[in-house]
Amino acid sequence: MEYKQRLQDYIKNMETDDIIFVSSLYEEHFSDVPDGAFFKMVERMTKEGLLMRVSKGIYAKPEATEEQVENGVLNFYFGENNDAGMYIGLKLYNKYNLTSVTDETRILYSNLTYQDRKIIRNVTIYRCPVELTYDHAKIIEMLEVLEHYKDIPKLDKKQFARFLVQMSKAYDDESARQVLEVMKYRKSTIAFLKSVLDEYKVPNTMSVYLNKASKYRIPKL
Picture 1 (tube, rainbow, N blue to C red):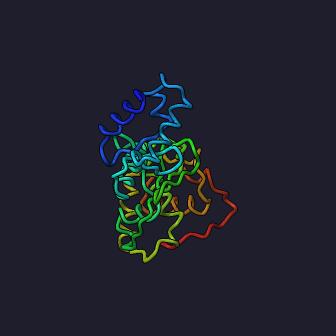
Picture 2 (spheres, rainbow, N blue to C red; picture 1 turned 90 degrees about the vertical axis):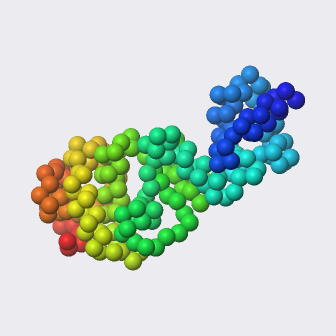
Picture 3 (tube, helix red, strand yellow; picture 1 turned 180 degrees about the vertical axis):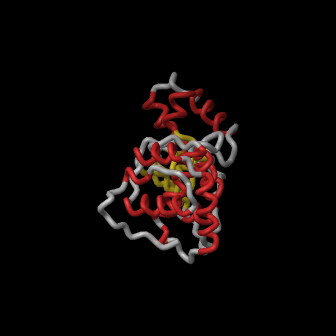
């Protein structure tokens, strides 16, 4: 009963949009409890309505709304200082006004997952193999947009042109090479990036990733 009360007190002190990773909670706060007893206690409390299961190993307060649960998931995977995660997909395109199309799904890269892909409700998290520094994130944003350029629904070409100018100004060649060492993008995407940088006279070494004898299909600027 003492263990259950401790867990109830912990849950009571949580914010409504907090989420619990039970394995981490056990290691950090309840390691003095036999692990089998702890996880059974979590299961019982879930059946009693004192906890809400969000996904495998992840729980929230029972009164949390779907939006609060989603915010809790996003807050965790973006990191305490908002420096461990970044949006890709539609949310990225919306960020730069490349399209007005939206949906409820959230797709992101994060440094805070060990799984290649994890899906929690409407949120899909992909493991990012490079530290998401400001410069790395800017490179990834540019590569993601160029990689999926043809698939962006109702693309605003004027905003796309502005995006290319903005990204070219923020381009850092060393960061680009660090990203491309560990993340896979199509050769045509790298050729597209090179053509954009060359157009705006930004020094770059993207040719090292390309075959001089190959002709890559890239959109005309």
